[in-house]
Length: 191
Image 1: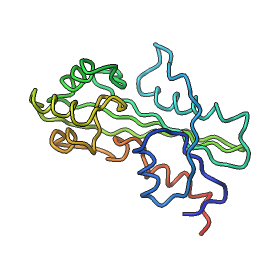
Image 2: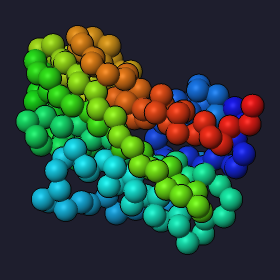
Image 3: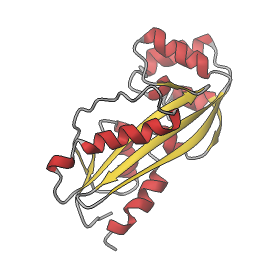
Image 4: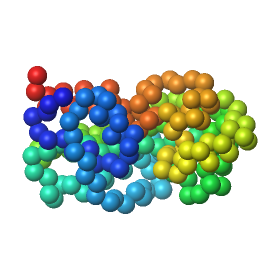
């Protein structure tokens, strides 16, 4: 899919790269390390758009004729954000928290050019069955989910066997609401 400007995916996530590639976009990858802290009083629902915007802002000084695409995903349960696990014990704690419950996954996106900036978000509700100790341990040892919000990947073992219901976009849970990104990038498409 050809755009009128070069597209830059500002993400180290292999899952976001896979989604963009499979959706047919031509893009390069460039990442600028960004502070991922947010104000404590900020509502959890606003955090992913805030962080995606911060990531995009890092490109503002050097932006030329490209489109920058940044994203951030959070997992929210009981109004608490659970980020990437710090270690095995933290991963275990998170998966036990998600077991036999419903949580929200919100992915925020910022698309920025020299002329404009657009922010958007998408929310998906995910239901997990009761996960056994063995399933949790097997997943942690086999899949090493330390780079994933909430300590799980929807496309990995624990998602395959543990998720019983998804209300919303699978791709939002995977890390990029491609249906919304596609609509936002349409105006740059060369048909």
